[in-house]
Image (cartoon, rainbow, N blue to C red; front, side, top):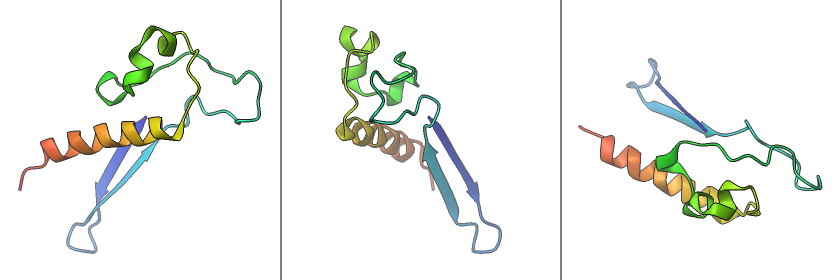
Length: 83
């Protein structure tokens, strides 16, 4: 995943951020999906992917996996914020 941000110079230095992960993207209709290997930044990975089945690519991708990963990123951002 890529977590990118920048401060806008024109509006009181507002922070604008983007989170994306297209490295192993595939169409849901492809059978089997391409790129079964799992990669990622360990602190932000879904707990299911850390199990042996997840590491072997046997785990079906679910929307809740994206949400869990987002929550881990949000926790990290909140822990890093100082103002």
